[in-house]
Picture 1: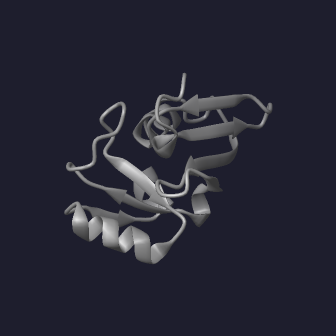
Picture 2: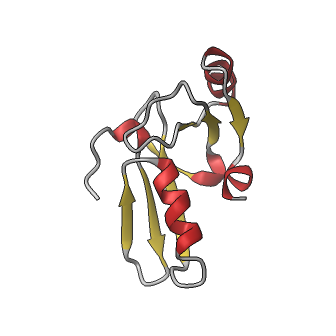
Length: 104
């Protein structure tokens, strides 16, 4: 998939070193659920909304809100900074989530 707006991007690197790119974090989550047991992730990355830098999902703080407009309608953004994520959740009437929360 082409990345239309980097601040919403995500990617999976699987055990075979194939890279799966997504222009919306929500699309990556849907793909992982649909391909559970088929695609075996070795690493998962998202882009920090503010800095546009890649980070591992375990280092990210996620905000989900209906007020966040993303390319495919997932409504999820990631931040490396916890305070910034908390502020974004408050500003956009969203929920602050960890990756395990999103993956459920």
